[in-house]
Length: 81
Length: 159
Image (cartoon, rainbow over all chains, first blue to last red):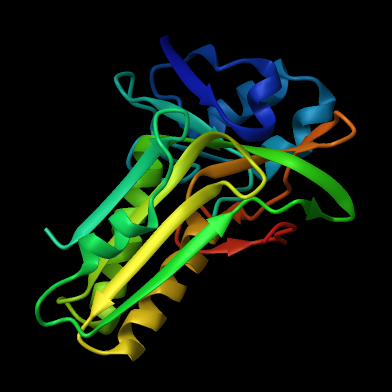
């Protein structure tokens, strides 16, 4: 198992600044999304569905394997500028 | 280096248009274009008194750099570009983003400046929480990112 910590932004902020999950060693982004859906109330499920996961350098594809030493974030729809 | 990108905590210092224009100046540049984004007092029929900007700073700065590099690919390597996006709470009128483009001629500067702001709005990990005069606050609905962060879909509801 590996511990994955994900920073929260935007509409996820009411939940805090980050969430952590214990996931299998070969877990990928899709597994992390499933873990979020399991952990959060149904009110957040649609938002999770339209959000993406990223590390500090790029938005990750669903089959990207999660590296333990990376900093992850969940990105709801963006509204910068 | 002819690109400057930054996420700046607005509680540490205001964004500065002159700083941007100074950066994009060069002896061979006859044109400079400037875009300023500011908090407006009304959105979607509601009176706004301020906006809080939330930013995933490392990825935001990465995306700003990629967008600026794309602009240079399109309009020339000599293009100088400056992007600073604010993080934190701003009152109405406060500057949230400053973008400047400097180039030999005006066409490239205008086009590059427009390209950079439009791409940032679609692709960069920044979120707005509007604070209304009635005491309520809401996160602004935005653009869903694609997996690779280079396109978007969905609707923006805030300019």
